[in-house]
Length: 450
Image 1 (tube, helix red, strand yellow):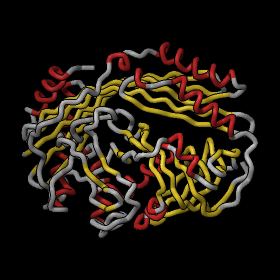
Image 2 (cartoon, helix red, strand yellow; image 1 turned 135 degrees about the horizontal axis):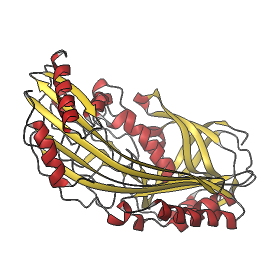
Image 3 (tube, one colour; image 1 turned 90 degrees about the horizontal axis):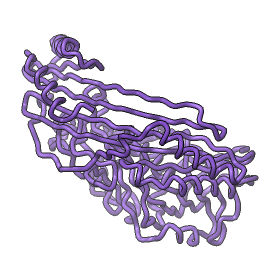
């Protein structure tokens, strides 16, 4: 960690050397520790201390971007000059709005000392307890436990001066028997928020319940999607529909449907980086203050997120959702997707299912089949169960689903009161906050032999 005063001073000193009309410097620093385990043994510890410094220089309507991971003054000035030289060779972009002006940022606590100080030994001791829970039940376990700390700073020639320190902790685990597996995961800014023992018990219980899975024919079923499954669906809906680029190109399932009801009124989805209970962050990578953006409100399509460039095209204002300049071609992107909780206790949701399937999570999702109609396909994994008359009967072999998520969400029966944070956007700046969702109709298109 460099610290606010020292870091901003260093970036400002480099900014002073710019000969461009406008210049932006973004610093992203990260200290990252990772402990991996497999076959109930820790097999790898990783530590990385790195940074990226991104320069965006503007000459009229021409923009150049260059980056370095060196903080040596000569290297920073050379990279600045490179960005200016690149700008000179670019074609003019008549719609480029210029760099943003300074804004006011919400004060958010995003740094936790205990998480920042977590050592490999502390992570190992935590993993040891997780492994012990699986071993007691005769299972093996694999997964990864990471802790990180860092800082993000942005300065530009129009007065932006933004700085935020950050921490994050995340763990995922898969418990395995000869015929089954069970999954659990969570992310938080603070280690103290994570109940590692409860997570391990969840993974163990799913593995135990899903042993010797039985085959089930594909078809249309009632489904309970647990938070990990909901988050994986949201990742694809976010990528294909909630951002400015797909919306303006007409490939988003929201394009041309603003103001129309597209899901059940039980579904509300928004992006909110200002919630201190989640992975909060006050500004985007242009230094624009983040705003809460309603995407779907009680089933009605409301809008998408914008960065400065997309906002000009859409004749609106940036919502504070710009990616780093090196990734800006992807358009604005939501890093803090929230599916609003409902009124049903999670413990009671299964009792409302006559005959259906409980899905722990998905993998191998493909969301590019028909983005206009929000069609996804993918596989269940690590805990798929048949429910009959409100009770889990037994584990079933994994199924492939293929369905329009807007169609499926129209059939929503209930949304849980409880929500869970699932990692997104690299954990340090983003996550999904998602509940469990009971769908009245979900289409499975294929089956497996495992």
